[in-house]
Each structure stands twice: as C-alpha cells, then as structure tokens.
Length: 176
Length: 132
Image (tube, rainbow over all chains, first blue to last red; front, side, top):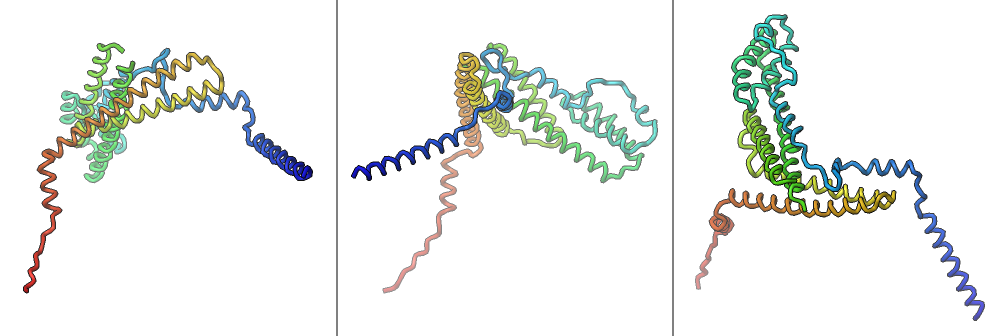
C-alpha cells in the first residue's frame, strides 16, 4: 500500500516538475532597453498630438492654405503675357504643361480667376498646343486626365481636411 | 476650446467645403456632394478618429506598463482619452441619426411606399370552381 502511495506521489511530483519546466520555457525573455525603445517608437503611430493633458485640435490655418493652393494659384507668381508665352518656340511638352496649369486654374472657385483663365490664357495656350502639333484626341486626353486628377484631389481634400476637421472639431470642441 | 473659437473654426471649415464643392461642380461633378454624401464623409472620419483614440489609449497603457514612466501623467491622459472616446461615440451616433433622417426624407411617404410594395408583392389568385 505504502509502495503504491510512493509511486503515485513520485508521479505527481514529476508531472508538476514538467509543468513548471514548461511554464518557464513559455515565459518571455526579459527585453533589452533598445528593444523596449523600438517598441515604444513603433507604438506611437496614431499621429495624435498632446498639448498638456488635452489633444491638439485641427490645424485650420494649414487647411485653408491647402485649399487655396488647389485653385491653381502658384506660390510665387511672375507676370507673363500671353504673347510672350506664345512666341518662343513650339515645344509640345512645354505647351501641354502650360495648358494643364491654365486649364486647372480655369476651374477655380474664384470667379475672376476662372473667367480670366478660361477666356484668355487657357484658350491661347490651347491654340499654341494645336500649333505645336497636338491632335484633338490628345487634347481631349489631357483634359480628361487633368479632370480625373483634380477631382480625386478635391475628394481627398474634402475627406481628409474638411470632414476630418469637422469631426475633430465636434469631438474635441465640447469634450468635457 | 472656447465657443467663439469653435464658431470661427466652423466658419472656416464651411468656407473650405463650399469652395471645394464649387470646384468639383466646375469640373463637372454636379450633385455628387449632397448633404448625405458629406454626412457620410464626416461619419467615416469620426470612426477613424475614434480608432486613433483607441490606438493611443492602448499605446499609453503599453508605455505605462512597460516603462513605468510617470504613471500619474499617463493616467490623466488615459482618463482624458476616455472622455474623448465617449464624445466620439456620441458624435458618431448623431451623424448616423442625421443620415437616417436624410434617407427617410429621400424615401418620402413611408406608408404609401409600403402599400405600393404590398400591391407589387401580392400574387394574383385563381379561383377554380369544380362543378358538382
């Protein structure tokens, strides 16, 4: 009887020992300082900025600047007359680039800019493009490409700037 | 954030929206950015911001447990985040309500529509008289 009890107790001890060894093997090894720092750096990916104890609200000044750049107004403007744009050589690529810029600006929300660009500059540059050998299909392709690009830009700006700003303003504006 | 500042920011945001929608119309995308579409955009961003808050909370908890930094400061931030998350939930709910209200407006008279659909679903019955 005692032999049997001894056998059972040794079996239990062995199984306990195995369990402890297994637990020790499963335990994670202590991480080094560099690993911890790397993990912390990787965890900071939300892009939220803290100002003391509260999160910083939408930076609307930047948003306003971004919105106005979409209208096609370059940051540094140099007055170039239509005739000066038309006169030097008839390079197709250059003409196409200038036409794309003028065509984009012709859809500005600014009425005066839109009218001027549509009525004079874009039309003149289109003539230049035709004179440099561009076909009607090529001009159509340029126009449709510019349209797609600008529409996707507008959608992105509405989503990321306006809608994000609105939502953030609503959440942070009246949070207790 | 003061009420005055919030109002000024809303004014700027509305101006940006108007300009962008006008530009989209000038490029030929008319009647695309309806109030419903704009509400959907804000709702989508609300969900995204809530996700950011949740991620930030888990980051702070991780940082606090792992590094044992200034626990008081981190706890204050976590508490603040909790209130932001609750506010985000309320904002999301309000936008969802707005969307359902706009959809209801588009549907029109619900009773008349349910009556019409019931007429369409009704199958014609054929009565067969069997002579004795």
